[in-house]
Structure formats: structure tokens, C-alpha cells
Image (tube, rainbow, N blue to C red; front, side, top):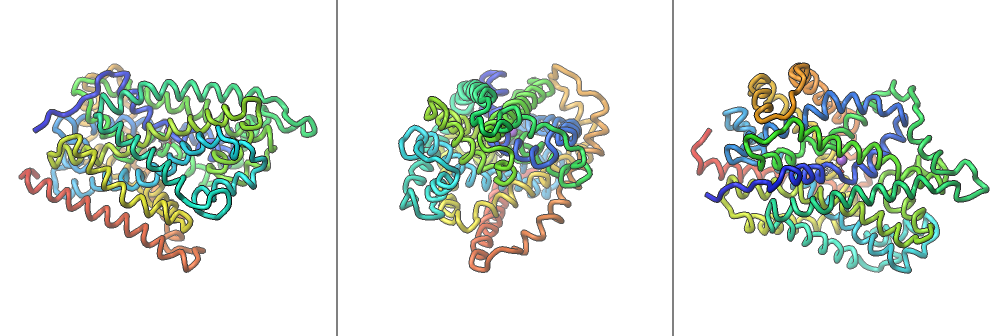
Length: 509
Ligand code: PHE
Ligand code: NA
């Protein structure tokens, strides 16, 4: 058997994990969620869930990951089987392969748009667009949704290929020489770029003197002014919990996988906290100070409330930036920032599948990367060509929203109840540079599972049923939605079969 890979340095591992966490969620999803759910008041449930769910789950995933790595398992089928010696455990763990696999299919494509747009920002055509309407048309014709600036999907496809090969090229070089090296370069660059853009956005002043209320400071005010009455709505609390899970990359299978390449005596407690802090800085400070203040300065507050995260990324923010002196450069930097944020995340979501092939099926690293690349390459075409039928949205709802708290719930129950919270705590503290307060035994045993179960069921209840029965979806689009579900199901069956094969050889329970 090949020896298991390890991280070369502690700082490299922390930057790689921070790279997985810091992504489009910080720069786009967070400001949109906060501004839609009470502004500054949103930070109350946000910080509560950070303390009772985000931080403890981060420690938990690192702990079970490092434990798995000790026995040669980097993915949840093997890890769950260590926590619970029962065949069912590894089939529950299949979820931790399916989630990253499907996620990576559409995340890579979205990531390639940011690369394409950083390129377009430098050119005349895009730079010459003057209003949100034509920018919207530009984006949609690029994606092949309507005709206009682009007559075919070929440019989008080329950028997708570049992004795809960049990703797998990095992974091909291995953990320390590929992912770790990328993140050591990209993460400092990402923070630097974000700080530059933040300073630029906050010093915009009042670009149009006829509208004195349109300025960057009002944008900050809009985002942060607390509207406490929003706290009465369950949806605010749900949004905060969902954002914490999404932004920290919890419940995906990726943090466990990264942690499995730690050594037994490596610290988890302080490192997990460090990664959380890096992500929260990138989210609350940088994410809150770029897109929204810039957009408010130019379009006033009304413009923000309507569009979602994608409008903020591809329409309003670049429109503002390209109209500044050196506009092409600012537009380029914005999209390049998003691209870096996306790239360091996309390598993290592909890793579990690669690790599964290596750990459980004894395939060599490079061969595992190539096999994964092929497995991912084929279904991506469904996402690319069926984008206008909501194929991507369907995958995103079931995988990006519903499955994360589901995997989280399974994990926390296996850890706190089956494996046992005391044993779990002992494992967590091996080599620890910091002690976790004892109150977290209670939190991880009762509070976190309860939060997760509620989150999962409320999502199913509120959106799941409506989405499952395709309410409001035109009949001619429904087959594509079912195709997306079929893809998820097929991935599930395929991964279960691989798990079955792997353990047949092993003779373990
Ligand atoms: N944590 C990432 C973010 O905040 C989101 C992400 C989800 C990254 C899934 C990778 C995989 O943007
Ligand atoms: Na994040």
C-alpha cells in the first residue's frame, strides 16, 4: 500500500483549509443574506449559531477526520465506520461522497464564469457596457440562455475547460505540492485583493451629486443598521444557521478529508479556531464592505433589495467598478478575487472523491485524479447545456442546501452519542494547543444536534415539499428537473456500489 500523503507545513494546512472555507459565500452570499434579514440584527443569530454550531462542528469534523486518517480513511464511509462498527455506518457515509461530487460539478462551472469575466473586464466590449440591462444580457447570452452578445456557448465552454484543467492539474501534483502550494500563494493574494477592493469601495464618496444619499457610507448603514423586528421571523434564524454551515464548508466531507492528512499529534483545537477566524474576517469585514457599499453608492438602496447574489457579482458591482478611473483594472481585480476564492474551494470539494479511490480502492494518487476528472467531466455537460432549464438550481437545492445539515446531523449523532462525547473529547484534545471549554460537551451532545435536526426539517417543510413537487415549474422544464434528481440518485447508487466493493476486499466490519 502507498504511504498516506501529509501536509508539508502547519501554516500550509491552515491556509488550504481556509481556502476551502473562504469562497463565493463570503463575498456574495453573506452580504445578500444579511441585508435581506435585518442587517445588523442578522448578526445576533449569526453569532449565536457560530458559537453553538459552527465552531463545535468545525472541531468535530477535524477530529473525526484526523482519527480516520490514522486508520487510512479520508472520507466519511470509512470514518463513520470507525465511529460505529456497523455496515450501515459506511452506507450513511456515502452521503459524504455524493455531496462533494455533485457540488463540484456545478461549482466548477460557476467558477469558470468568474475567470471568463475577469478576462472580459479587460476587453472593450464588456468595458463599454453602461447599464444593468445590457450587462444582464451579456451574462445571459454568455451562458447560452438568450441570444445577444454571444451567438454560441463556445466561449463559456472554453473558459470551463481552462478552469477544469487548472483544477485537476493542481490536484495531479498532490496534496503538499498541489493544493497546499496553491493556497499558500492564493490565500494571501486573496486577502490583499479583497483589502484593496474594500478600500476602493469605501472611498467612493458620493459619485453622483444629484443623489447625495447614494454613497458608500449609506451602503454600510444599509447593511448594518439593525432591524430587530426581523428577529421575530423564523426565516431569519434559518438563514443565519444556513449561512454558518455553508460558509464554513461544514457537512460536505471536505474538512474531514483535509484533516485526515494531519498527523496524530497535530493540534486541532487552535487550528480549527484559526481557520474559523480567517473565514469570519473574510466574511464579516471584507464580504460586508465591498459589493454592497459600492452598489449603494451608485444605484441607491433600491437596486440591492431585488437581485440576488449573482446579480451583485456579475452586474452591479462590476458596473460600478468599471466606471471608476482605471475601471478595467478594478473590474479585473474583482472577478479575479472571486476566481481565487472559487478555485481554492473547488480543489477542496474534489479531494474527497480522489481520496476515496486512493484509500479504499488502492488506486495511486495520479491515477485517482485522472479517474475523478473523467467521472466529473461527463455529467458537467448536463449542467452546461441545461442551465436555462434550472438544472443547476435543482442540484444546488438538494445538495447545497438540504444535504449539508443532513450529513451534519448524522455526524454529530455518531460522534456524540454512538462513539461517545467523552471519548470524542479525548480524541479532540490529542496534541491540542488549547482546551475546549467543558460546556461544549453539553453543546455537542444536545444543542448542536437539536439545531441541525430543526434546520433540516424546517427546510424540508418550508421549501423541500414545494420544490419536490415542482410547484410553479412549467411542465416543459420538469423533465430536466427530474434528470437532475436522477443524476443525484445515480451518483448515490454508484458510490454505494464502490463502498460495497471496497469493503468486500477488506473483511472488516
Ligand atoms: N464555504 C464556501 C463559501 O463560503 C462554500 C463552498 C461550498 C465551498 C462548497 C466549497 C464547497 O463560499
Ligand atoms: Na466561507
